[in-house]
Amino acid sequence: MQSSTLSLVFAAFLLASIITKLWLASRQIRHVVKHRGQVPAGFDMAVGLYNHQRAADYTVDKLRFDLVSTAISTAVLVGWTLLGGLDALNIALRDAVVPSHGPLVYQLALILSFGLISSLVDLPLAAWSTFRIEQRHGFNRMKFGMWVGDQLKEGLLGLVLGAPIAALILWLMGAAGPQWWLWAWGAWVGFSLLLMIVFPIFIAPLFNKFSPLEDDALKGKVESLMARCGFAAKGLFVMDGSRRSAHANAYFTGLGSSKRVVFYDTLLSRLSHGEIEAVLAHELGHFKHKHVLKRMIGMFAMSLLGFALLGWLSRQVFFYQGLGVTPNLGAPNDALALLLFMLAVPVVMFFVAPVFAHFSRRDEFQADAYACVHAQATDLRQALIKLYKDNSSTLTPDPLYVRFYYSHPPASERMAAMGL
Ligand SMILES: [Zn+2]
Image (cartoon, rainbow, N blue to C red):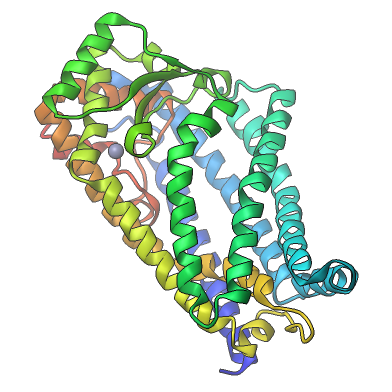
């Protein structure tokens, strides 16, 4: 392939993805605004017009913000690639670092500098989302100092976790021969599994406090549900999610013996015991249907394809030149290949995302059905309505927007599937 052909294909994909995003967002905004005046049938008693309109305004605000961040991140992406940003950074670092510290340090420095610049660009957007959008709609509970602390912690964590795996993959790329991508994939899978085990025990507690569930009546209910479903988890924990946000949630985390159930305190304070049981039964449904395992295997298979593709692309001159970078002559190109791949892949993957969203929504229906068998269907209904209401999730999304983006089916479809 000619490098100019790749440039054109890349630009075409980028343009098509922006147009699609813009079109879908404007559809969603129009749809939500059009139905703002009336609560959909079946929800009018439980949600009420005030909350329905609140959800519409929140949804529209978030979409407008998404459009601004899409525009900014696209400009940044074009800046890195076609406009030569990565090329300039590469030349500066290569000339400064290779003579004194050698090729591996230079490559690590390139990846770290790229990561640092990207995070700095994202920072104002993240702040705007928390202190404008979430704040205005009554969800944010963070003070600025705490937010800055979070950002620093996340940055440090990214460095502590990211630098060793980046160094390992770069080393494999240079030392493991033509089949390096297979080794690198193995290292990546091992790293991901390790992260799943380590996350609940060491990483999540850096940001939140986890205390054992103490409400004995609820604990008894939850434990008997888990026994009924034949499920063993290490522990039931309550997370102080209310420190940061009013959004409520519950989730499973961990792998093997580090597996645990986590309830946000915001969820516990809003739902009755029966409703909490139903929400947990839904989560258990995901496990019983092996959704978590299937998703993991799917991700590992995708990353194998990705590494194989990168193994081939990293040897093609057009791959670098087509994305705005002149390959190094006296130094390895592995870090450049990794960065370009990470920049280009999401542009293409955007068009594949609806396939994943489709399977995710199918899983949600299955988990709901499981919950209706092992807990009360009316409790699940009540819990879902409360969560939709409290999180200001719109009840009237655009059907096409749902098809493209939604990992969870809209409330009306979930109720209909439950036969309520
Ligand atoms: Zn689910």
